[in-house]
Image (cartoon, rainbow, N blue to C red):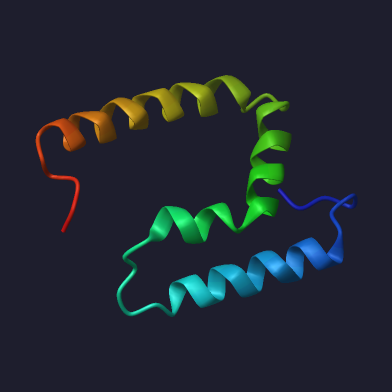
Length: 78
């Protein structure tokens, strides 16, 4: 969540990075692009400290299980 403490440069960098990511015609390396948007991780860290922290952690673990199962079944690429 954007707060009054957020730097304007972080907001601009995140917006431009996500805009460039959204304009890709073939998103072959999505994790590499998302790792470059570090202000999103700062925002998620702030959410984890709020009352949404526990549901966020539960959702994260459930998604990890789902994606691990997809990988193990061979449905992870294309």
